[in-house]
Image 1 (cartoon, rainbow, N blue to C red):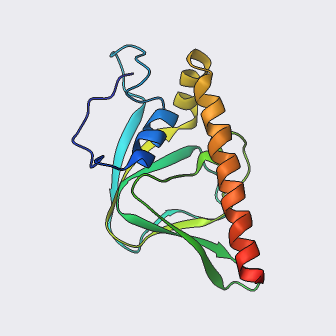
Image 2 (image 1 turned 45 degrees about the vertical axis):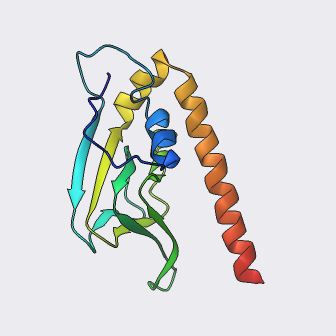
Length: 154
């Protein structure tokens, strides 16, 4: 499952390395007979995932910027965060079968590395440490969202 490097803009961006590690890419050689990830490109102002849809994919932003949007009960939308190169989203889909909790929309043309649930499960069975990394990312995400809520109350 070793993915050939495609000159991703890593530079000093340790978040990209962290999430590539999370995906089990490059650091876990599992045989070169197949690839577990795909690349996807999207233009600006396109929805990558939609709130309340069922998801089975996690996304790593190789380059670009996205907006995290929550739809309110009255139908209006509120941007709650932005993410850029090195961030990952959709990871909750790897853990449960609940609907997506937010819409992710591109702000700029963006390129993603994607990992589907089935490939994640197969990789996590072989390398349980990856599942622990997902738990760590989820914990960090909860803490980050908690701080956003606290800051809005101030």
